[in-house]
Length: 356
Image (cartoon, rainbow, N blue to C red; front, top):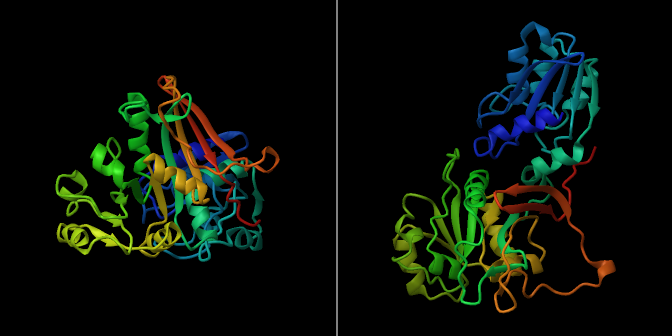
């Protein structure tokens, strides 16, 4: 199962809005074939593994990171292929909560195929957290916040300089990370000061992420690369109802789509209606802190760099309300690993486990 989860990652940036799925075919303790969902609209992981196994699939065990689908979408039901291949047993890490696709376990049981949910259910849920979240909550996207801080939790030095706290390995990882999200967001001040491109480099996503700027006054101008390239890469601005019409007109005249929500919650609801199911916010500090304070962050990608910036530097978590220790929310650790000299810590606010 752990290998199936590793295989699933090979679809990163290519399969959304479908989930990441990997599959392994076993005969006894021997792996005879493997597969993964490689491209949206293409064969699912189960079909790829069964095709690779051929006749060896008959009487074998299929280990898959997500319950096989039981509906006809862009491809036929995986349950049909499993039955046709003569598989004896199916082990899935986690149930599929999708209203159309779920129910594969029941279909297989009725066909006399032994089924099991688990092991590594929590790991599989973390792998597909955005997919599972948006099947359980329909009023906003899955929101991830990426922060690069000093070891004392600062996002910039006392002079406001933040490039670069993290090293090249961490920056490369962020480009890879972007490819798997529907949208990349920053605050208006960050967009003006850092002039980012907010594109995924190193891994070409199936669809380029929409670039979103939370800019209440719609202050972006023609000197910003996001505006200059808005006709090439989708670029949206979340302004406020009070944003000057003249500013909005300039943006819209240059291909930027402007929304005017009254609150952050309303902004996220509008994004979900516009087709955004997962969003990666990369700052700045004020936007990140507000998202955390309002309980709108579902995952935190925290890059910690071995440098001290001191008391006068810009704090990453300023403005977060205090909580008594006994009542403080404890997040779920998803991953810890080195990125060059930096450390990546991935935390989820909660596990998105579907009902069994």
